[in-house]
Image 1: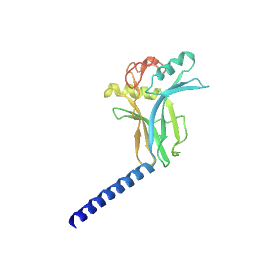
Image 2: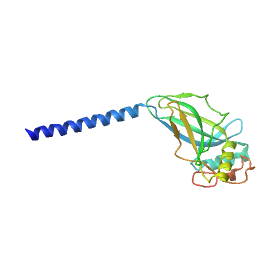
Image 3: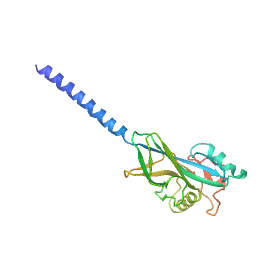
Image 4: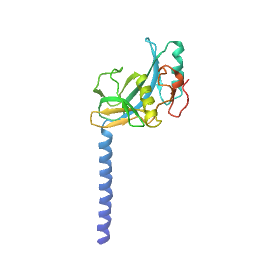
Length: 190
């Protein structure tokens, strides 16, 4: 009788643990979940060209300045891959030093913004503030990279895994100078 009781107790413990794990996973997966990516691009007033900042194509995009795409920008794309909506309260860029830049004038929906499950939304700003942050931090702190940062309505902060690095140089260089830009691994973007 003692062996049978022990087997039933162990079986009960295994089933209870499995139920607890299942409930925890269901709870976590039923919430909204945000994924942030950084993108760069350029505009000519009639059209825009953009790509994820960690791809090779940003160097091609920024090389279009000779064809009239003279307004470079940087932005974030927020994807909700959870099962419930999320609210984006604020977005910006965070430098590895901890310094953040939040746009006052950006292209995209007004904030706070609700993103439904399975949907995404993008915001972008002029590239010059990102260049200014990088120049200031490289002289004051140490070289680093920028990543997208999004503050959610539940108080959470989600940042992009991939980064965007602006090469150091003369702070008076124009934002359209393709020699000042590089991807997350330091490749030149010209």
